Image (cartoon, rainbow, N blue to C red; front, side, top):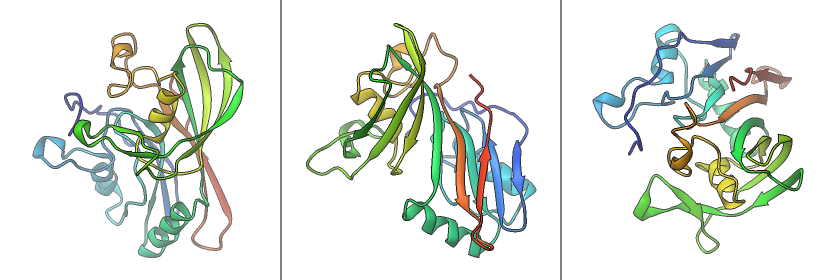
Length: 216
């Protein structure tokens, strides 16, 4: 279920890096990573990618309203290799977000288990009984009494993890249509961007670090 009408941007495909195994793309906010269940949700990043790279294979996803770096495998070997890296938490992901209020202290870690909030899905919530472990490090880049700009470094990859963890701290991400709808009128988009992704290359294991500049 999509929380707001689907009107994806028509931005041209922003290729950050490609080689014989890997493709890194800068996903725009408002575009699904994969198609939804109905015909009106068919436009998505992987469909646009496959129009240029027909062999591209999905490895991970970003939420519709999140922008930033996504990696695709260009061979089955690359897809398996990257999938294991994500599964074993060997990738390094860095996000930038703008959140409500002054986040204090200047850095810290959220360790709160998450699960689907079934009556209100696709929302997730903190669930100490049935939730799966979810860990996020944060660091404040700058702050005022109104909002804070933060760097978020998830150690796990749960659905909506950064969004729910910031909400749990009392500092929801600005423009979030699910967890902070009251801030959407003042913000043109959800203020969450996957700025950097570091993986090991499937061909040889060398580290590859790709960034996309933050648009807000």
